[in-house]
Image (cartoon, rainbow, N blue to C red; front, side, top):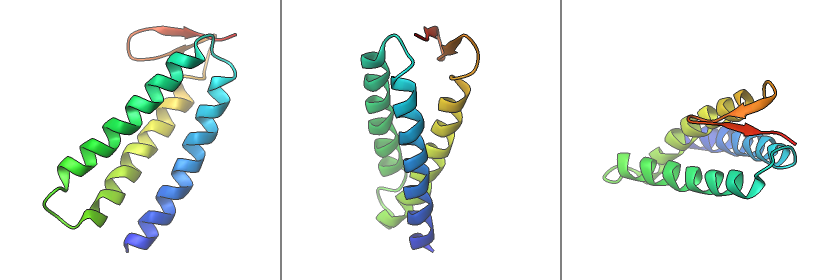
Length: 94
């Protein structure tokens, strides 16, 4: 079961990284986008570790998959339109 989640997570992370790399080429503040992604990854990993700290650590994989799938949706959403919307602001495209 966990192997299946591991394969799904690997595929999701590949897609997330592809979208992120694509966004880095079109935003006017790629350094800030990179900092945001780095912070998001730390948050995802810490949140999943916290939720399953007393359980089998393999249970973190489905949690990471769920977070990553949501991040993919966010990355896809912010590429629509003339600017990319984060939670608080519009990130202009080049």
